Image (cartoon, rainbow, N blue to C red):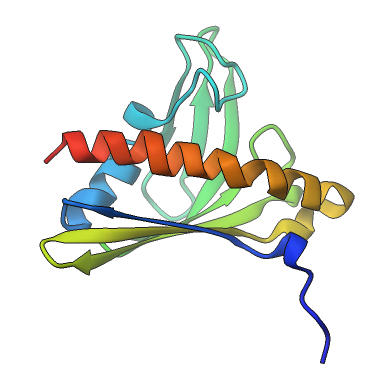
Length: 155
C-alpha cells in the first residue's frame, strides 16, 4: 500500500459560530468582500482593493484593484446555500495550477460548524509543498481570525 505524501494533504480548518448554517454561508460567500483581508491577502494589497465571489456555478472569485484591474483567483464549482460551497483557487497563477477549496456549513446546536478544506496541491508541481506550508497559517488567520470575527459580529 502506497504511503500518502502528508506534505500534499488537504489543509482542514474548522470553527464554531453562533450563527446558523444559512447565515454563516451568507456571511462567508455572499459577503466575502466585506471580511476578506485585502491588505495582507490579495495581489494588489492596497486600501481600495475589493474582492468578491459570483455565487453561481462557473462564477468567478475575483479581486478588483483600485486601478480597475481584475485578477481572477478561481471559479465557483458548487453552491448549496447553507450547506456547501466549492471553488477552485489560483490567485496570481494560471488556472491550470488551481487547487480546490470546499467549505461545509453544518448545524451545531443553535449555531454552526464551518469547515474549510483546501487540497489539490499536486497541480502546483514542485512548489506545492512550499505553498501548502504557507497556506497553513494563512487559512488560520483568514478563516479563524478574519471570517470568525466578521461572522460573530453579525449575530
